[in-house]
Amino acid sequence: MTLWWRDRVISGLLAILALSAGAAAPVAARAQNTMPVAETKAEKGARMHWWRQARFGMFIHWGLYAVPAGIYKGKPVGGIGEWIMHEGKIPVSVYADYARQFNPTRFDADTWVRIAKAAGMKYIVMTAKHHDGFAMYHTTVDSYNIYDATPFKRDPIAEMAAACKRQGIRFGIYYSQSQDWHHRGGGSFGGHWDPAQDGDYDTYLKTVAQPQLRELLTKYHPAVLWFDTPVDMTPARVAPFEALLGLDPGVIVNNRLGGGFRGDTETPEQTIPPTGFPGRDWETCMTINDTWGYKRDDTNFKSTATLLHNLIDIASKGGNYLLNVGPDATGKIPQPEVDRLEQIGQWLQRNGEAIYGASASPYKRLPFDGRSTVKGNTLYLTVFQWPETGLTLPGVQTAPVSATALATGKRLAIRRLPDGLLTLGKPDRLDPIATVIKLHFSAAPVIFEPKIFVARQPDGSYTLKAAEAALDGATAQFEGSGPGDIGYWTNASDTVHWALKVPSAGAYQVQLEYACDPSSAGGSYKITVDGAPTAVQGTIEKTGGWQEYTMITLPGTLNLPAGHPVVRVTPLAIPNGALMNLRRITLRPASKN
Image 1 (tube, rainbow, N blue to C red):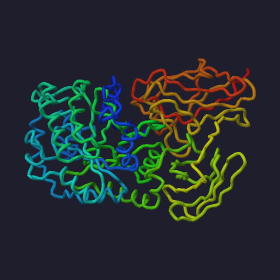
Image 2 (image 1 turned 135 degrees about the vertical axis):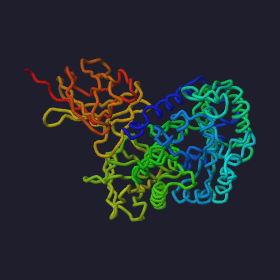
Image 3 (image 1 turned 45 degrees about the vertical axis):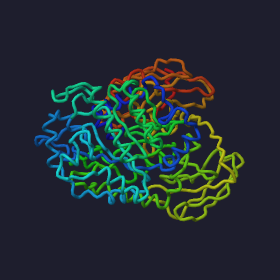
Image 4 (image 1 turned 180 degrees about the vertical axis):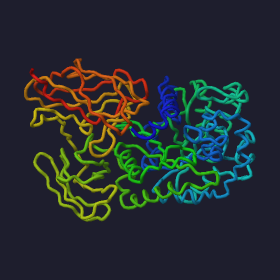
């Protein structure tokens, strides 16, 4: 599990669950398209074309919350930076006073856009109003905005839109349509804490959210519109917002408006879905450290390698990566974030061909630590760690023409065996983060991926590794290099399984190697063979943390028939956010005594 689960398990998980509930609501009349219902698949494809080519964008969370920067009354407030008003239960009038201190004279739109472009990002999505209700543009709805309420007297959204146009990058806008902790009647996850917030929700939507959305669409013409946290947004409440979208027919809209509105894009947050969203456009949004809005004590920045591996992983599953920066109250993007973005950009200058405009991998699983993408007749293999036994590629049915190291252009040796196995030569220089091999074919590559069967070890045991598991569901996924684990196991309907090659029937003891943070302990599971129940099941006890593994032997035995039985782990209950990080299961012959 990542730090998101350790540090945001309360506020973050609850917010995600709220979003999931909204996404699962009955589908509204315009469920398939944000544009007119008559939009054809080809028309939608044309509208989405630039976005599907982009693969990498910048999210910017910047607002009044940058002033307290995670501190209220001299003490740190838990949770994420932009939620400080909510988490600290700060009264409306007290929080509004931060506007008098907000004078971000170091803000320069062209500098921000240059940072994004140097990182290889193709679009920017910036907060125009977050849940604190403070508008980061010159709205005419009321004076609670950066132009009228602060010494700054400028419109950052207008300046960013102009800078993006000058520098040839798409500009999008984030707008919190439902949650608003400042305006009377605005939605609030968990309810209000200040009588000044009380009022009629429908009146808020009609007098604040809808007119501000009209302003944003007509004044700035965003390429992307990013809604969020649809608290109490019913289909009837969504309908006026849908009607407003027609003011700018080219805009791409996410799936967080609420009321069953599907929008154009799925939006997993702080996680990468194991198989993407086949048939749907999707975009993972993620922080560089642990928070979205600036929080001065959050220095837990992800490494450049982690961020790049995330981008590569997302592209290999057909998605986009929206990576967040959280500028401070002076208008400066923190230097550790800038440094990492610059390093990502340097890698993309050499290897971006494998990312931009590329489609999802034809492989469900690769026999090496890395990912792949495809574009036309070319398969790109992005190798995180070169295998000691050499790079092989199974199931290739199309004749290869050439193989080169993408960064240097140097040709590599190819050997093709009759069974479709390719072996590729090793480049002279390996990239310390990821080495890309460009494999060109005579036609679009056809892959017949062989099924993996776990074979019996010389001592009679079977080792069911996380890296070789088949995953079924929406959240559970393989994470990490080396042995790795099955993590993000937050949905009780998600299962993992292995197919075995068993020469003769027998009984086996089951050993489980796993990790579980104390905050998530208490989940339970069962193990089945070919779908039939067995006596083997258990409850997950805590370990020292998500990366502190323990090995336990489960009570009972597992009877394996001869042939190719499927061993499956199925959750019975996940009461505390996540089941476990599962590294491996070992089946050892049961004693005959």
